[in-house]
Image 1 (cartoon, helix red, strand yellow):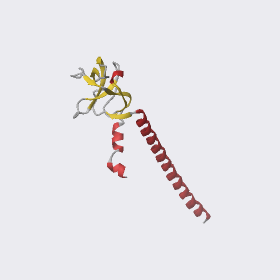
Image 2 (cartoon, one colour):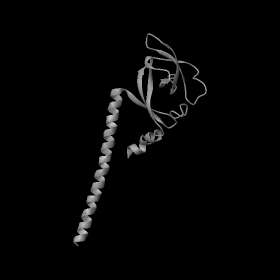
Image 3 (cartoon, one colour):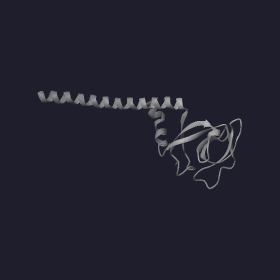
Image 4 (tube, rainbow, N blue to C red):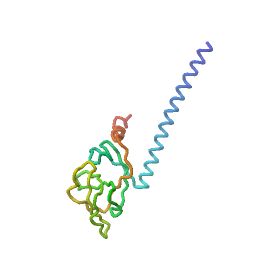
Length: 155
């Protein structure tokens, strides 16, 4: 009878420890998310998800990239930047291949080309700001999209 009490007393302790461990992991994950949000806001950093392979092999489809908005006058040939094509279209992220002009008002006129593309983009871009890619993580975009699922968020 003493053994039964000892065994049953040990089970709740193990279950309690597992729950505590799980809650600790969730707290650490939440803390990391909060730190990343604060850093993102303070440093003006955002995340871009890639659905196409126009920048392969440098940035493959399904990758994410961390980007920072900067004045277009600060770009250099070889930088990978994101610009808005037109109001109704998605932004494009390609490598700067030529800087044609940097005007006094800070607007840069430049040409870009995707690493996987045979030709440069048709028209030069003329913008005051760009989002420069400073790091990319391959294959993680589907995971991030999964975490934004309404079913997962509801749970």
